[in-house]
Length: 256
Image (tube, rainbow, N blue to C red; front, side, top):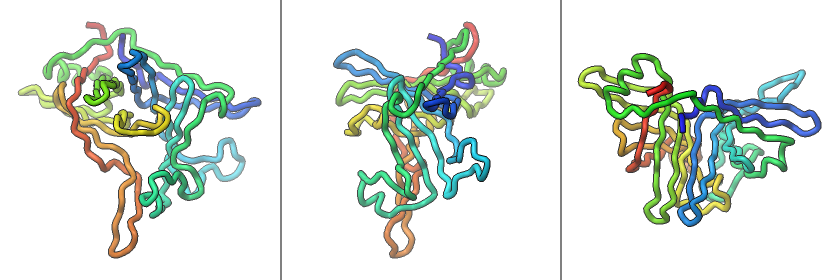
């Protein structure tokens, strides 16, 4: 299967009764496989935007503002909001879902919220796996679109997932040929999560690697900020490093 053309892949939702239609580009994909059934489900992270009053004749930007992004499957969604408003109780109660008057995470069925949700996942006409450092350096210097595919597995349960994402930042050395990917955002499964729905068991992350069998992910998590003797406040940012054994392919959007 050829690599996903993320720049031309979209999630589109349509409001009910002729309401607002939003088209948002896809940032990343993750396909999770259950070893007990052999069934796979794909999930997609949409590009972030800012909180807004859509189609307003007055102010457009919501204040206090927040980062808005979401994960979608064919049937479900999980909305993720990142506020600048801090809430010290958030760390004390992991089940607390509100801050600044809005829910941080919001799970739902697509059909319950919108008239239609459409995932248009487009693929390149051709793609090939770059099998060594020299091929990656060459494709980078020729400005060929690159896509990463990283397989992660949970040794305890046997569950596995394939992360797919555009490689937006590539670092190289011509001689000796070396590369290092530093890219995101993407989604990666939290295999230890006990959340009710699979779509709630993801971390938003960035990934860094310079070989095909290992990677470091930095996860976006609520993080305490301590100041003097005051209670801890939290920010949501990339703060937890997760070093994993993985299997990665770097694909070039061109014929072999």
